[in-house]
Length: 113
Ligand code: 5GP
Ligand code: ZN
View 1 (cartoon, rainbow, N blue to C red):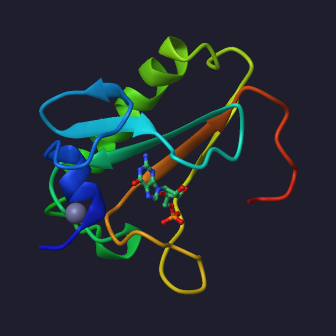
View 2: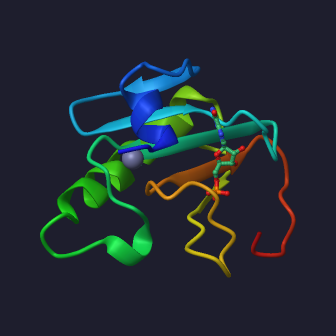
């Protein structure tokens, strides 16, 4: 499958890793929208939030259990941060591999994106 994030997970495209375990991989966004901007993705290819099912949602729960640890590691846990996932055309999702943006390090806009 020709998927950018599958290639990053496989190490075929370099990335700045901040977390890896059996189920997920987190790395710095190439075009940061905040002082801290990390993407966390499941290793299994799921195209987006719109493709989460009862069957594959365990990895999503896992990702959300890891996010606070990553936030702590990045020094943004106490100040707070934002977790965002864009979905499909209207959501402006540009990479069709499920990913959650972790944004922080400053007071973010009070708009949702
Ligand atoms: P989306 O627009 O789908 O919500 O988010 C995709 C994100 O992937 C964007 O924030 C974009 O900057 C990031 N991105 C795109 N290509 C690369 C890449 O090759 N490496 C990294 N680290 N991030 C990327
Ligand atoms: Zn993929």
